Amino acid sequence: MMFKKACGKNIRLQDETYGSLLKAMSQVGRIDEAINMYQTMLKRGIKVKDSCYCAFANVLCKEDQSGDGYGLLVNIMKQGHHPCPSQLSKYIASLCRRKKWKKAEELLNLMLKKGLLPDSVPCCLLMEYYCFNREMDKVVALHYEMVKVEGSLDVTTYNTILEGLWREKKAEEAVGVFDYMTGLNLVNSASFTIMICELCRMKEMRKAMKIHDEMLKMGFKPDKSSGGLESELVADLLTLQAESKSGVIHLDDRTVSKFLTSPRTPRPYSFLIFFDAANFHDKPELRLRELRREFEIVASSFITNHNSSNTKLFFGDIEFRESQSSFQLFGVNSLPHVRLVGPTAKSLKDDSDVMDQGDFSRLAESMAEFVQYRTKLTVGPIHRPPALSKMQLGLITALLLLCLPLVAKRIFAGETLLHDPKIWLSGAFFVYFFSVSGAMHNIIRKMPMFLVDRNNPNKLVFFYQGSGMQLGAEGFAVGFLYTVVGLLLAFVTHVLVYVKDATAKRLAMLFTLLVSFWAVKKVILLDNWKTGYGIHGFWPSSWN
Image 1 (cartoon, helix red, strand yellow):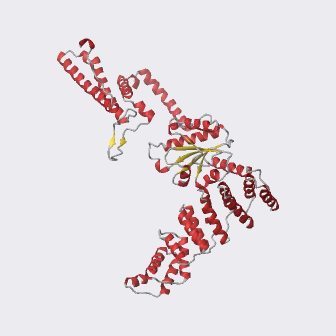
Image 2 (cartoon, rainbow, N blue to C red; image 1 turned 60 degrees about the vertical axis):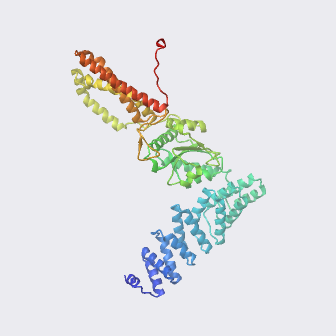
Image 3 (cartoon, helix red, strand yellow; image 1 turned 30 degrees about the vertical axis):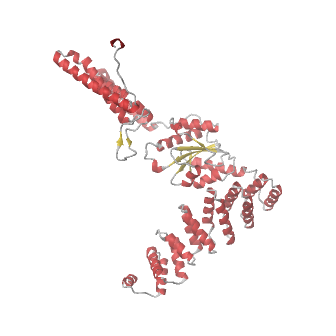
């Protein structure tokens, strides 16, 4: 309060006072006031003790409640003031988990250049992100910076780096990383297996034997090729499959890297992936909800038919908001999208098989045929969930039994709706309108009633010009005209014949002819507008 009064009266305090206030506000967690104090100090060019800046930087790392927190933290570090390395590491890790990779990368590089030793967590997260996106040059650069400050990662991340480097044919860098791992005793059987297999592929038998001997000296047992890693991956997939109700494994950027990009080809399994976007579920033209349900039915049917023992094919889904990097990796730019990643696919974009849009017409059955054609694996019968549960069926059966005596009594007395001629008349009218309006076509094709004009979003299109498409409203309009003609014809043949007044008959017939001619003319004009074809009359040739 006193500080605000002093600022309001333009009273300049001693520099030490600003530093003490900044430190005190930071220590009690009054982050917004501390930020305002620091910005005031910057404007007035006030310099304080390093401990004051460090306290402020530490609270920025703990509580990033302001959008300015990251920029202020970078500004403080560039001025030579260093926050607590562990607090800064936690902050960088939180940036990684929120997928703010560029900010995390800049802070970590700044931290390493200042000679600060970061914790392994943010470094591992960034390394895995680089490997997933195949940015191996950044992996090598970050590794060299870590070597300078004698930092380290965990064994799993190091193994991912080794696989990525070998995949990009960076043999020298892979050997350097492995030597550093060995010096820190951060190796396991999988690390040696990766190096031995890749050196053997390069026909570097002496180097492979040397590493093999070193592995035995350290007490590790050799895996048979990569069988140990593969069986571990399959076991993890089976666990994730069992945890899912439908058997569809939810994938994200991390699991895509773990199960698809990091393992060497050929992988022991294929993956059928459904790409989803929760933001677009409310768009009926995409049918994402329906297709997602059908995809789950295929997955559960496949697992049921193979008694959960098949390990050749797994089903997964990727959500856009959670895994935008994976969408880019697969090259997915439109939905719905289903893609099969085979065991030998190295490039997820170029080597995987995409399900055509036309194959979604028969839903689960089409997806099953796609799987069988591409993988030679039989999905088997499609097991759809029953429309009614056992409880609902039981209640309906009990209700029918209770109502049966009353229904039988009404049937014998002739008092049911089926005995009412008006019901049959209404039914005939409905069937006629349903037939001539193209309603069955609309249901099968799932045609909308209208469209929004692309040139003017505020305008609705009810009639589509072109012979290949008919909107719902258009069909109902034509059906209405046909129904009017049909009703007038029924009136003439079943009612008008009993009228005795000749004048009334003539007037009714004239009205019927005029309305029918108008209705048929409208239908012909609409057909001519849609298709470009016209209807022409010709006089009999004998009249010429």
